[in-house]
Length: 232
Image (cartoon, rainbow, N blue to C red; front, side, top):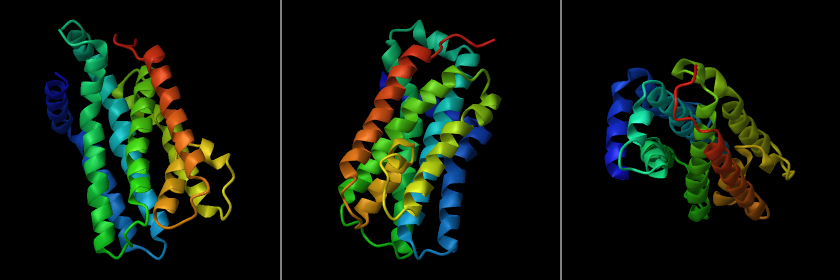
């Protein structure tokens, strides 16, 4: 049932040229553009590539897609079917998540071909990608609940989107990590990428805990604020 819903959602997503370009082209183009500039700091390059993928492909796409499906009553129709509420939501989240993970593989492969070192701790890089995707999915579901139209998603997604970038840059730019940095979305991603590429591992546990906490809080808020009926 989840796979059937996911295939349908992926078809709908690809039919929308704006959503498709935002989910597919934008992260890849910006990620490749980073390689054209100075790549002396691969930690920064890879961190920004992953954050762009998470921000555009996962978070923004999830928000916009859920709002669009709600406003055209697609969610309401799905809810009257055989699938449970949880299955419906998971089925709609799978395409954006799968696209994001695929883009991460492509971007990391391009970076490797351009001279990026192999990660010393690849599992931490996987944790940054998968954990970040889970956090952004939860955040996207929450944001969809306060967004009345797909067009307004450009505004309602901005706070979390910029926090994601700001937290990543703040953590990357600091020689010593203040644990407050890890409380900001994106800070944990940057710290895990640092550790994966050979940096200190002192903050891996706090970063992982913060990532899990953001995901859990987002999931709890999603259950409370997700809307099936169109907003007026």
